[in-house]
Length: 198
Image 1 (cartoon, rainbow, N blue to C red):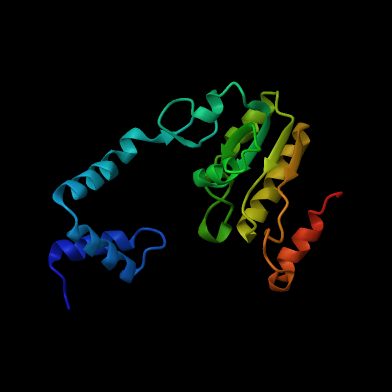
Image 2: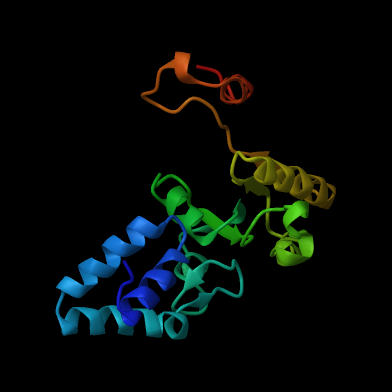
């Protein structure tokens, strides 16, 4: 059955969002239809003003509504320690630990030659500039444990080590609360590699 044109158009636009398939797009569209005009207006206004109110920090490339971002402007954070992540939402994942008190650098992707993503498409040059300018003692590579994330980490390590900075990689392995029998070989190998004194 064909839906009215405005509903079809909304479903088509919703399907373009990551993780939203045809059924989810339909559910969201019909949920919006059950709401009030004010609900739809508020959602539309929030989406319309999103790109006007948010930009990337000129120093670390995290998303922000001010310049510099709160992480770069915070005097309680150490500029000697930089945590490199792939995407802006990865900053939130690190912040949830409440343990990291350094600064960030967001690449906005990972190396993926098959998809046409090389170092020039990422925020690599500004990372090198930050390290070269001095004061940075350690760069933590917190890229994803995917093929692309690993390739990015290896590339950055080779690029940064000659600059005299300590380059470390986050440990990966078996998640807390899981059973060893369900860990695949790569996860188990990473867990053994990242072991520490106890």
